[in-house]
Picture 1: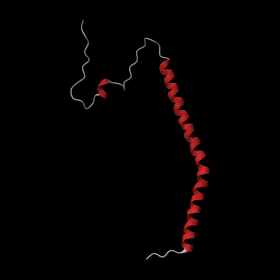
Picture 2: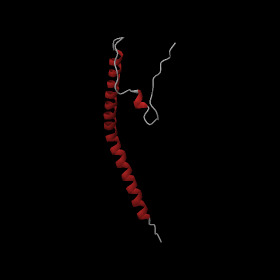
Picture 3: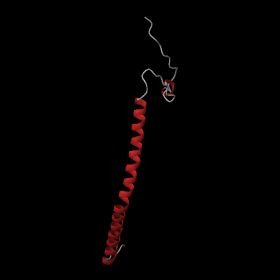
Picture 4: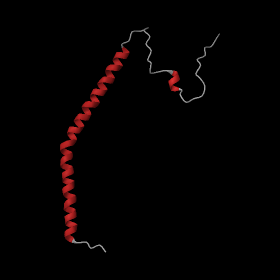
Length: 90
């Protein structure tokens, strides 16, 4: 049989209140620092992506560049058969 006491109840409520206040205090201290760091890293990532986009856009017209990461055979892994590129003969 569980016996509840008034002092035990108030002690538990006091612990909950103290824990809540500590979490709230540390959140107000640490959250701005964490968010500032997150925003800086995301800004750097976006700047790198923008820079890469503009570099790719500046390539001269008529210049051929092959990206080794984009092959047709790599996308078709797991499928049976071999990819054959047919040309229409007129």
